[in-house]
Amino acid sequence: MSMHRPSGCPSCAEPLEEGDRFCGYCGSPVCAFPPPLPADDPTLALPVPAPAPAPAAARAAVSPGRPPAPPWPAGGASPWDAAGPGPCDPPAPPAAGPAPSGVPASPSPAWGDGGAAQDAGAGSAPAGWTGDGYHLADPACAPEPGPAAPPAPAPEPAAPAPSGPADPAAAQDPAYGGGETRHDRPYGGPDAPGASPWAAAAAEAPYGSTPPGHEAAGRKTCVACRAGRVDTDGYCEHCGHAQPRERDHVEEELGSVAAVSDRGLRHHRNEDSFAVAATALADGSTATVAIVCDGVSSASRPDDASAAAAAAANETLLEALPRGTHPKEAMHRAILAAADAVTALAPEVPGAQNAPACTLVGAVVSGGLLTVGWVGDSRAYWVPDDRGALPRRLTEDDSWAAQMVAAGLMGEAEAYADARAHAITGWLGADAYELEPHTATFRPDHAGVVVVCTDGLWNYAESAVDMARVLPADAAVRPLHGAQVLVGHALDGGGHDNVTVAVVPFAAPPADGTAADASPRAEAAAHPRA
Image (cartoon, rainbow, N blue to C red; front, side, top):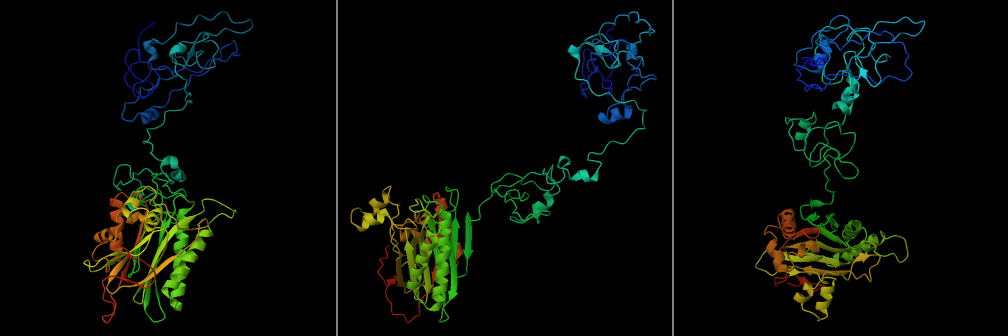
């Protein structure tokens, strides 16, 4: 057997080395083999033309930049056949025996002839051996057979095939990079490698805007990549980034009042809620309203409870105050309405446990009066503009620690250091023991600011002095900034809870006021504390 080998790959003309079974450039086998012969082949080999090799232009398109393979000689024989069989070739097949009676014998075809008994389907190939029209080889070194190219005349050299689909409609197929398949990277500019046609428009689109082509879907745009759309599960379809919930951080300013609510750093959602408003009174003056509610995390649907309570209390105050109702009475009605709204959220099952619940604190500034109302441990503080005056806490907590201090069983420092300190004894909800709204009215004799907040803030500034120290001095003229600073203080301290605060400026009374002391005077049973 001759050990000569083809000098190049039959497919791409890449030079071969001794012993190569596959082309190192295009991966094509040096020897290709058809499937095994069927068992019912006729005993007589019929002459079948050998399949023509792939045109040179097609081979050039498969391996651009490589020299084309040598032209095939007439008759379909391989140019390398003259060199003899290779190392994968089997021994020469045995001579054909005498033909059956009545059938003329046919001469054995030469290797590489067009009449090929070795072609697929020919019955004269030895059992266990296969061939491709060029050589025979041992099945042990035979790769999977490939489809034979049909005979065709050599076409004229063709231009390189385009990279995209020939059918324009196929351009919308995601397999070709069309449709909604995206390949640009989050935060990548429009000129970045791999940027898609959406990148330029997305880079100019602000957070929350809808990129071109997405208007009809009506979905929000991802705040991370600013290109993908947010699915109903709250995640971006493009980059997979979880989107912030609408209540994770909320700010509102009405000129005379401002509020900020934040989820904090430890909770997975914001269970606080607030409502701020202003309304005209019958005498032409303006009343400012601020309501802050804190959902009880151990109860069900705490976020819904706080939202329902804040909305109901605010609506009740805006209806009662313009009719001339005294602010203290209006606040009492507002707390009862908030309690009814939270109770309505409970399941309609007798004796149901773990019903939605929340706390509430509110403030109304109108006609020189400051009215506060509360249930639970959310608080209201008075901080005078003159920081030389004494700030006050205007509410008493409905909590275990407050009860221990009020009963004289523990000191304040000891009670609030106890693990049970923040266990509330009063709340709004269907399972509340007994609803006792607290209300108080004050008449300050100087300008200041009312801070209405949840325990997510006062845990980091518990005393009135600490609260006054954190509140900016210009909070009366910049209430939103003051609320932002207070929320930032809680987050810097650890943000263990949701944080919500409303800042309500209180204007100075007329110069002929009769009050002479520097602290708010209570007109009802209330005990402001420093």
